[in-house]
Length: 363
Image (tube, rainbow, N blue to C red; front, side, top):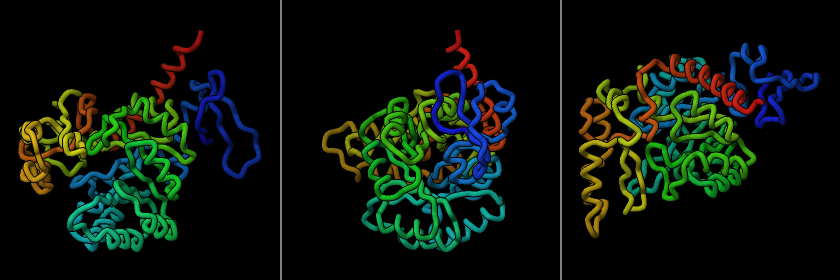
């Protein structure tokens, strides 16, 4: 049975029979035994990507490695390797093979394309992804049409991350298969429009024909239930997966995420029009102090925000050693489970909260 997007009138959802069958659709209440016993959560995303649950681990620099991606995929979600975490395209090929040894489930690769004075060899990274037989590619930043055409010709499913509906519409016109829309709550770069997920997600859903994945501020089953209710076909999480047993991050940093509240993130680079949401620590506070001065330039903070410094903090455990990306969802992180425990719990909570919400609408 496949749960279709949208809620028909009344306390029912529409279910269709096995693809290729000719039986009429079923209408069942959310508390029907057939629903409660269904182990998989099926949406357009699970059908398209071949996964059990519509939960994606977004690409994260220095974090999207084989041990995390495989754990997410083995738990029923979609794990994502981060291409540029690897120093060379050849190293990425080796990491893809390492991931294959750890899971037989689908996984993807993230390739974030940003302008740079000395850009990495993006097309060579793409070639390695395609030659390795990976069939799911998550892109962010720029999304060159020639890259899209090349990936589509290889039979790859494209997920493009963006922070505005206008960008999502452009990506859809360019031929991507899925849009992952990042609300203002997200870690990393939320854009300059400052639109939260509660508005951004349904705004995207109402204008796009392709599936929408909700990202930013989601860390438990309540957020997943809300995203599905807003019309999304799945969720994407980054910060929440950083606080798992399998994440290749020092335990001190994982504990810092647990200790943080929803008020413990900071927005850097506002004056530079390249906003980044990061964990509150000594480095991010110093960056913001410098930014408050007149005539500030990126060179004034470059030494503080260097990627190598952030990597050292993540791997060495110094909470104040560098910039640590984190979303406002840190306020909802209270433990460090395995990926399997986290995803199982999320799915269970999602179902429970959808049932509870439905019950509140009954007479």
